Image (cartoon, rainbow, N blue to C red; front, side, top):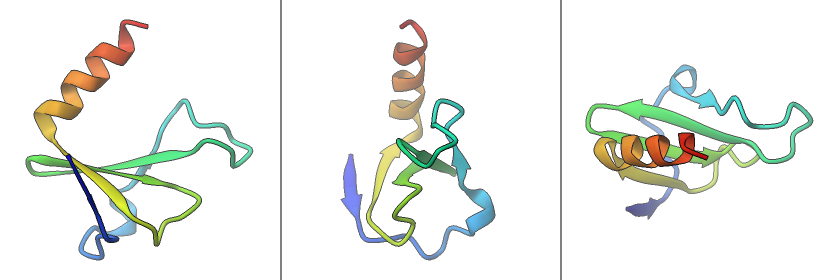
Length: 68
C-alpha cells in the first residue's frame, strides 16, 4: 500500500464514487481501476493524495467487506 501525491495521469472519467457514499457530500470515496492497481481518493479533495493498492489486495478487501 502506498500513499502518494495526486495522480494526474488518471482521467477524471476513470473515477467512480462508492455506491455506499452519501449523496449529501459526507463520506465519499472514489476509486479508479488501472492495470494491476486500484487508486482510492476522497471525492471532496480530488487534488489531494490518493491511496494505491494492488488489484489483488483491493479484491480481497471488497470480498471481506461484502461479508459484512
